[in-house]
Length: 139
Image 1 (spheres, helix red, strand yellow):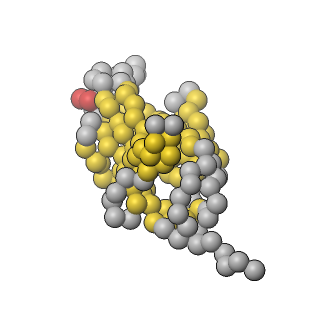
Image 2 (tube, one colour):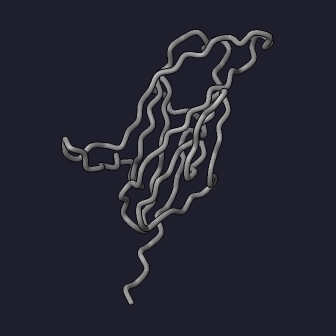
């Protein structure tokens, strides 16, 4: 997982712009989470469900205003990978995701974490923390 300004997937590769930061703001700006998942050989050909959650420092969901009221900031999807031809049996299979966000209004001087689950499980390295800068003092 990598925080970045923007990301996209083309031909199975991640293209990342402004990647690798852990400090943002204090004003809302667009951002993205770039993900590369290694799928075990025996997990190929099966559908998998992923979920990405934004949580505060206490592990509570971050709420954003929507037309339906305040909702947790969550993204979900499904994926299936095939056994690529010519790859030795037992090799992990890469799958890349790019999740882009418009400006997210976050509290200044606060710690947040993106948490990824696949098939309901949190995997090692499947969380990514960042901090918002404090607002500068008024002149």
